Image 1 (cartoon, rainbow, N blue to C red):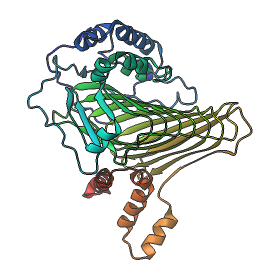
Image 2: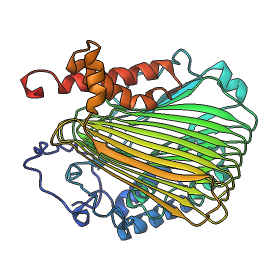
Image 3: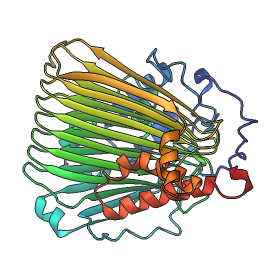
Length: 469
């Protein structure tokens, strides 16, 4: 392990097969670039203030001290065999990431209020339409945020609860992030059209990024996040991204994410949300790509009458691993949470669906439901569902959880076949219908169609030729 990244390109070792890949315990997991020298180099490149350098140092100390999993309910379900990062180096614009040829700046798509695109080299480009400009939307990089409003930037970065203090990989992002986006909607502004946040990544780089979304009171915003493979080599890479959301009273945020990164890459995702009084948040998250995903969502219903609706789907194949965790904490009165995770698994793919809803003593009148469902489409596929509740306030309207894991329902298959639909088509329709709840919630038509095409293509790829049998 070296103390600092270098400018020389790294040629990662060939990806081992599933049969040859050894099982690695959480204590053996290593991020070679996670050291003080790398953090200092990033701070120098970004010309950042001393307080931010100190914040990075605090994150590094926590990263070193924390185990991979702190929740005793979930320690059994940690598998990092697919996360070999020995050949990955942090993306440092101007140092080890070239810009030739530079990707074209994004044009504003039809039906989109604004768009911003970043890759391992930094900002690719941005565009904003008339609606966004009239509403006073702010869409900028974190570097631009820090220059325009240093005090606001510091408050956003240091805000308590912005990142989970008990998560090792969130602290990794806190320490080594070099790219980011800031989105802000002023009080009373309501955008009808969605905005698009687009990230792309090529190996062998690690892209560590932060996205900060702030809605003033009585505001409304729809966000579509796209995580795509880049145009560079398809080598092992790492994407770690945070989405830090704060929603003012009476506001509405719809956040959709489509993750279709290369199968050579690893992704660690963290999403946190502080939800004010009578504010509403809708998550619609689709996980399709990468070799390994660890996704965590933390929802805090701080105000009275707030709500969160969260739907996350997985469509896995080959030896992909998806590790999804959801924490929802009710603090305000008469708040509502509906949380749904679904996984359809082909080949030897595996998924862990882990959720915990906590009802604090102050949260009278809570209405909460947590559902986790896995569909195993082959004998080697495996899904694990672990829904949990922690209730300190008995005066609730409803607090419930549900889970199931199994193959396709034979009665559904029989019904479709009895109507003349071939067995293979019937299976396909059932699986795609099982995953439709996220697709239907994506607020941009072109993104919905893109997601449907990706789901169908992934099914078809796994059922073509003799190997499909």
